[in-house]
Image 1: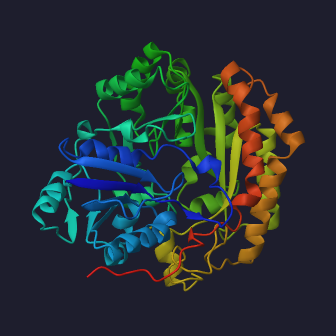
Image 2 (image 1 turned 90 degrees about the horizontal axis):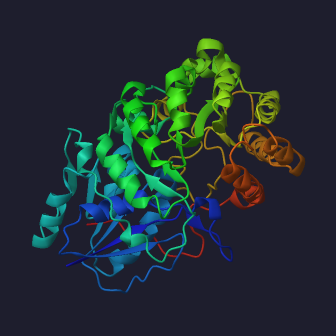
Length: 451
């Protein structure tokens, strides 16, 4: 038996290559391959990098989908449905809106796959696929198995992705993570993480620990950091800003080889932070104190900001960019607020009748960077325009140079050497990302609904 695993793109614009910074290894695909019994022939295609051979024989197609890739995933599913090939969907979007996703698949996996994948495969062998597979309990993360052999020959960004934990306990109203994992956090066994990193260290000069919040449990993260220090690897991750006030954690972070962290600053406005239920960002001296702490340990910051909350004005954009430049962030993102289905934010906007589309991720009129809801002080198109302006200012030549020469950003030769290529890549992609289609512009026909 053969299954075909496909990683769908966000979309495709006619005549253009896919955006380079969106081309990291798709770890969910490798996780599914790792769970699949060895007697099954596994084929893998990445829609971002290659043409999918729809006519190649296979017994089933498997895709993990997110909200941004849903439309393209349904297009791909329709091509296989024409050929009478069953499609199995999983991933965040399948859990957030299962009633929608199951329209385009013979089967969907709700939640995490580790505890149900053997059942899916057994039913597939016997031709008895169920419409839904779901177990309410959480899998033991020692069950994670990753088969990276499927990536062989594919040109991804030179970063090794490793999962060290899942979930986040914070209640941020815009975040789909809290919905998917029900505000829980679990860490993989330390010995499993170390073993995986050790096998990969000779192939990767930089690792990205893809956790939703590496600091989801600071206490349990500290033993892992002590073991990572022995491996002498470079790595980056995502974490909540509260961890920047724990001196022991920062010291261990630095000694373990951490070179940078993505932190959701989101906004400089305390009222907005309260609205998004993220007022913990201002704890213990707020952003300035957190940055002083991080700089003291030479930990670079990828800062993210979102706009579209009730108290945002044009000045909010200018102030955020000025702050980002003053703090000399390694890189930064200035994005509009996105209401993902299943989140408290989406439900609130829906109740207030402020959503501009019934399902923005499927609407043919929607493009990447469009604001899919009506705001109170700014027009949606103004938010899009100001986000683009903010990115252009932050990634201007003079500001790249200014930030690159900061003590923290040039304190490590490897990170300093990569600072300028990374920043110029982000700057060059600003216009390419703006207005990017969801789904393939060249695809024609209608989305086929499963029986």
